[in-house]
Image 1 (cartoon, rainbow, N blue to C red):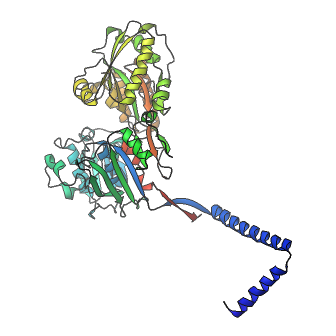
Image 2 (image 1 turned 90 degrees about the horizontal axis):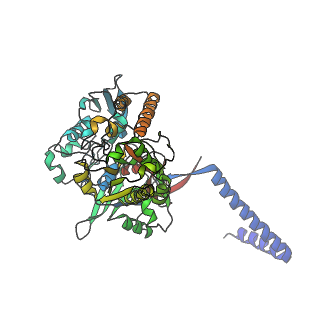
Image 3 (image 1 turned 60 degrees about the vertical axis):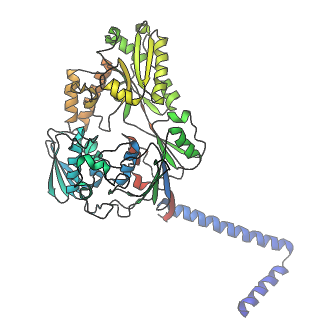
Length: 530
């Protein structure tokens, strides 16, 4: 301290000492008010002149029921495979700089972005796209996408451009097909025979081009995978993801999953519906997102095996109108579902009916052993038996449903679900050509007018005309009552309040769609000037 400063401070001290006690308190008060005002002004200034935005950093732990087996989007074995594949691989639509279709709707040209790199540094090209399609179309690969791409040819136009040629126009080729085709690297799989693809070394160490890349995985003493660690891809073509580390942790069942959340071991988890929360409560802070799902559930009536009485339209209408959908939605889904009266939301509520036609009916209903379906079926059984029917529920494991029931169309009535996708193309579920296994017209429904409308709907590129066609299809199917339509449950996602950036508005088809915009998720924030 300089001599001058010492003198100045001494004078200030003497001046303060010369003041009376009252004056000293007044001075102190004024100083405190000045400091508080300055602090408040500074805070207000910062708040009004800045905004909170996502910041890079942090980690997020996602809980999943089940095990990963082979992380590859061409032939995922489990839901866990699909979830991780969504973060590791890029779809054709995501990687496209442009997509153009011909006037007749049969030719689609896809131009890829220039800057897409595989996680090993190689460039993603049109050759990778064509190789991926060839894998999907190879019956030995047994890809779930096989049926979607039958009759589709692909030609290499240039290093970054591919031309797809369809046998007939399809309005939803981009949204329903190309958006689900995730590209795999030709340079890593080309020399592996199709039947040996799942035996390769890339099962839990995949190389993709998505926002995250696999860094490591951990197993327990029994060989079960307990954790897969992903790290942000700094070379991701859409920009580096916000969250540095994304960790998947795996659990045997929903109860274990929710327990892990309550213990703070995970930060988020997807649930098929809100139904598990009625039994296993989440006790720590969380946000619950009800994501609109594009699946619906109905009781499909098999006209070949049902009792003679159910061939009556009046009886089927009475069955439909006797179902207390509101009770099911409140008790089973905690209100997170939409009631349905037809194959889409366009079908209106037909109102209540007299239970008179139900008296004396003997009904056999097959139900998959999913808790929310079993609970729904028990309420429906109560509804129908209140009207005088006798209902036998056959609650069976999913494996039995597939092998013994659906394969042989061995059911009078079955409670089952369909996923319509955003296009709401109902062809696969209600066209008469799709009545037999493995096709999905579970009601074995036949209506020539509906067939014609379904065919026209998927070949029409005018959205307003398609909407009118969909209303006609919906109302006609609903009026024929080939099924008792029940509800469309929301997909429930539970996450820590610190998570931001989740897209809760876009409807989802399958559970991995919750990661649609995962690169925009964040757990860290910062303030920046406007």
